[in-house]
Each structure stands twice: as C-alpha cells, then as structure tokens.
Image 1: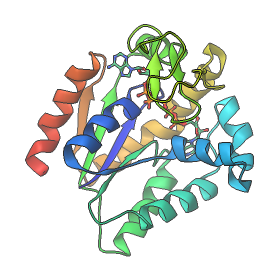
Image 2: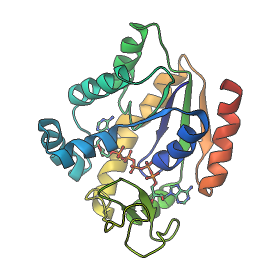
Image 3: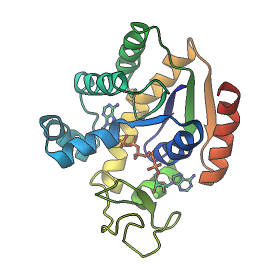
Image 4: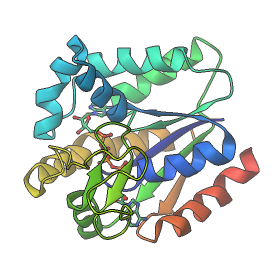
Length: 215
Ligand code: AP5
C-alpha cells in the first residue's frame, strides 16, 4: 500500500504513522524527520532548510520534491506511508507525475481533522528525543522518567518550531498552502476524513477500519 497522511501540524500524523507501519509493515517516510536528520548531520540540504523550519515556513518546493522523490525511489516494494508530504498542490502534482512514470499510484489518502485549540496544546506540550526522534507529550504521553527518553536515556527537548508563536505561522501556512491539497486529491481519489480529536488509540482504530479493507 502507498498511503498519504494529511493533517495540520500537531494533528498526530507521526503518532498514527507508527501504528500504521507496524500493522501493515510499511516504510514511514516523514519529510519533517528526514529534514531534521539532515540538520543533525549538518548536510547542505539541512543547512538550507533550517531557517524555514525554525520560523514555521515551508521549505521551498524544489528542495522538498527532489528529496522526497529520491526517498520514495529507494523505498522497498512493500509500500510506504507519506507523512508531511505532499504539502502544496505543486508537490502533490509532481508526486503524481513521478509515480505515474513508474506505473504506480497512491492507494489511500487519510485526512486527520483536529480542532485548533487541541492542536496548540499538542504542539506546545510535545517533547522529542534529539537522538532517536521518539515523541512524547508532557501530559498525554509522558516518559517513565520526566524529561528522559525511555528508549536511549537522552534528555528530551522541545522542537524550535513548537513554540506558540511559530505555531501561528505553521497553521497559517497549513490553511493557505496545504489545505488545498485535500481538494486536489478529492478530484480523482477518495479521501478518508478521520476525526483525530480523540485519544490516539481511538484515532488508530478509525484509521485501521478504513485501511483494513485495502490491505
Ligand atoms: P513536520 O515535522 O512535518 O511537522 P508538522 O506537519 O507540522 O507535523 P508535526 O510533526 O508538528 O505533527 P504531527 O501531526 O506529526 O503530530 P505528532 O504525532 O507528533 O514539518 C516541520 C517543518 O519541516 C515544516 O514546518 C516545514 O518547514 C518543513 N517541512 C516538512 N515537510 C515539508 C514539505 N512537504 N514541504 C515544505 N516544508 C516541509 O503529535 C503531536 C503531539 O501530540 C505529540 O506530543 C503527541 O504525543 C501528541 N498526540 C498525538 N496524537 C494525540 C492524540 N490523539 N491525543 C493526545 N495527544 C496526541
């Protein structure tokens, strides 16, 4: 299966992708995680992306499209779930073109719908492990020891773009540039809307009920 997971910043895309890849044995391709990996490694791409990411702006289409099409091209045959890409109509159209060139297409598009107040609480309370990228939340998903990653003992940090101020820019960009991607897909595909305001396990079960028939 090739899946696209759409949703505003903090909607729970990364959280749900973990459940999806476990159940359907897919590769998780998160454009945000890939960019953060480039930053940690100090690559040219990572340096280029830094100022856009930290201010809540989108990284230019040309950079992202090349990066993601390359990642998809290297994915094994088993399928993947795209998280955070495509995020503009141009990205979606270029992805379709690249897939068509290989006689492939996206099989399922899921749209996580969350109220803005919920988003702000989720984002400002998120903490991540700088080493293994595990995601926690100060209220909803606490580590066993406060401020310490369960998996590798690293000190948890707040992403630079997870402040209330930067979240406003991210949401504005989502509404102006990413929300139109939903209508782009609706022209030729079924888009499954998922109420993602609920607890993570309840959202997971809704997603499984949409994907199980396709697996
Ligand atoms: P990216 O990393 O993709 O950020 P995002 O889309 O803003 O998404 P988030 O990672 O913030 O949220 P999420 O939906 O994954 O939520 P999560 O599961 O962690 O992108 C970062 C930046 O990179 C962009 O701003 C841009 O600059 C650049 N970029 C990336 N892709 C790009 C592209 N295609 N084009 C251009 N630029 C690009 O959950 C959030 C928190 O809530 C967690 O703490 C979690 O524990 C908690 N939580 C999750 N679900 C629930 C639930 N159901 N109930 C309670 N708590 C929950």
